[in-house]
Amino acid sequence: MNCARVASHIVKWLSDYAETAAMDGFVVGVSGGIDSAVTSTLCAMTGKPTLCLDMPIHQAPDQVSRAASHIDWLAQSHPLVRRSTVSLTEVYDLFASSLPDGPDASQGLAMANTRARLRMTTLYAMAQRRRALVAGTGNKVEDFGVGFYTKYGDGGVDLSPIADLMKT
Image (tube, rainbow, N blue to C red; front, side, top):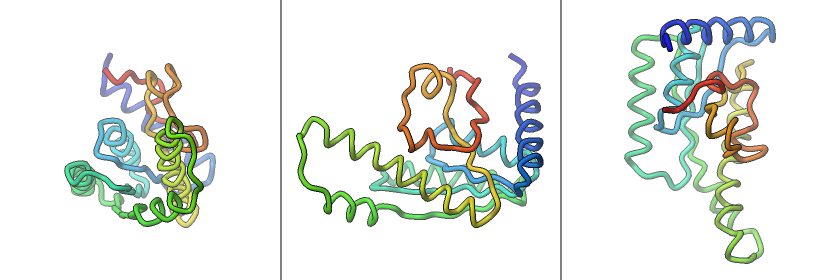
């Protein structure tokens, strides 16, 4: 695969999509992982405003610092990249404490899906304030092959720039 050619194709597609949709830029949830790093970089390469949003929920400090380091690095070469952090820990804890107890087997998965859905809601709230598109970070294998995503959560996006790319 010619990575430069693929990146150029995706960047043009993102730019064209934003223009056709009459939107000003992109919002990307940045987790500190490779998928969000690649997606946010491709969005930034369009030259359009790109908000990189960190949304920790009981996140390990090394994950938060990886996300922050990537966003800081990206902003150095792309002046329209902005970073924002919205801690969702308090919202998550309040929501979790208000739910009645359920079977132990389903509680872990339900709360994991709740994290993804809180983040999706936050991404859209921030995007709508900026006339921006929510760019998903799902890759071909996890989201579009196996189907490993949360319905109305991390699968709830406007466009998926790396949907045709394998993680490996």
